[in-house]
Structures are given as structure tokens and as C-alpha cells.
Length: 279
Image 1 (cartoon, helix red, strand yellow):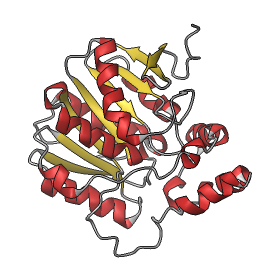
Image 2 (cartoon, one colour; image 1 turned 90 degrees about the vertical axis):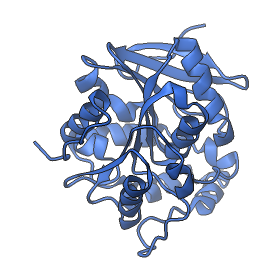
Image 3 (cartoon, one colour; image 1 turned 60 degrees about the vertical axis):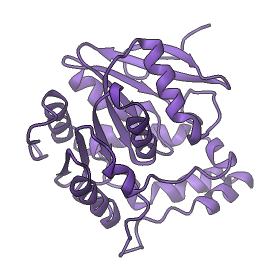
């Protein structure tokens, strides 16, 4: 079978997960880092990390179920098993794991179930049940409305609405081009598959015994920032860092500061993490 087309300049393969295929791309050399993208995105969101960090790490990015080039239907309850298959397929004994936004719940669940495989955990702009959203204004995602739009053949309208959401803000230049390309290719099939599944809960973070970095932009929504702080307070080996001037998509909008912070954490996960500052 022809492998998926490369998106990050790396080597690609298909991962058979039983009910379909996941597109997997690997680039670089060094300790392995598995990257999980957020909602409406795909593995292209890690373009600027692949470019900057491939000289120090082996970066492994997948298109999650229901997204990008992957054919497996969206089903978050199966994503932990998908990661386990990926690690077996690539012979990954231990690796660093990054879960962005919606994928944070999968990253947490995998670290709970497979502690021996996770060298460290990065949670970027994730949601957590049990953390009150006092502002309750800018972070709400009207998923049921979006699903209705897609079912009614109004995908373009749904994407225009989502493009204006606070969680998608702050991209310029190349980052904006990457974001626009991902959204243009988003097809809404995950919304048609039904509810996306619950977020992780704060008590799940308390049970994690791996080195953990919670990171987002200091202009992300108030709720995501409060979750980032709560993770650092709750996780036994937790740190929190905010990328100055960045929003939810801080790895794209402020890649240099983000890359410095996460690469330092991967190299020395039990030592203090440098502040994320702009160059």
C-alpha cells in the first residue's frame, strides 16, 4: 500500500488500528517524542516543531482518528489503544508524549495505563472537567450546533464560525497559512460520529507520577490558563509555563519560545523549566 503523503518532510507509514488506518510521520533523530494534535487540526500543526527540533529528537506525529489523512473513524475511547499499537509498531520502549487541547485526555489516560512507556508528558492548552470556568464566555465550543451544521451540509459555515473562535486566534504569517490549510481540509466527520467523549478530570492529573509540563499562551482563554495552573499544582511532578503574547495555538504562533521550553523539559524533565519568552 502506498504510504500517506509526507506533511512534515519525514518518513510516513500507515498504522492499522483494526477499524481503519492512521497516518503516521516520523522525522529527526534522538529521543522519541509522540505528538497528538487538537480538534479540527492534523499533524501539520507540528510543522514548526519538526523543523526546529528534528536535530535533537525523533518526532512522531499522527493524524488522530477522524482527522487528516487517517481513515479510522473518530472514537476517543480507542485512542489509548491506538497509541499502544503505535509504540509497538515503532519499537518505542519509552517516549515523551505531547497532548494538545482535545488530545490531552488521551495523553493523560495513556500515561495512567502505560506509565512505564512515558518518559515525560506535555499537556498543551487542554480542558479538564472539574475546573470551573468563571468567565464562561470565550471558551465554549458549540459542538452540537456545529454537528447540526455539518449534517445540514453547511460545513463551510461551520468552519467560518470556528475560525473566528478565541481558541483559533493569534496566528500570522506562515503559522496562519498552516492553520488555514488544516481548517480547509477539515471535513467534520468526527462531529457526525457523535459526542467526542469526556475530558479528563483533575483527579486524573493527581494520579500521574511522570514529569509533567502544562503549557499554553498567556493570551489563551481564562479557563485554559486556570487549568494549566491547576495541573502544575496537582501533578506530583508538575510544572506550568505560559508563552508570552500567545494564544491557544502557541506552538504555531510563537514557535521559538515554545520549542525552547519543551525541548529543555524533554532534556531534563525533573529540573526547573525555563520560562517561555519571545525571542
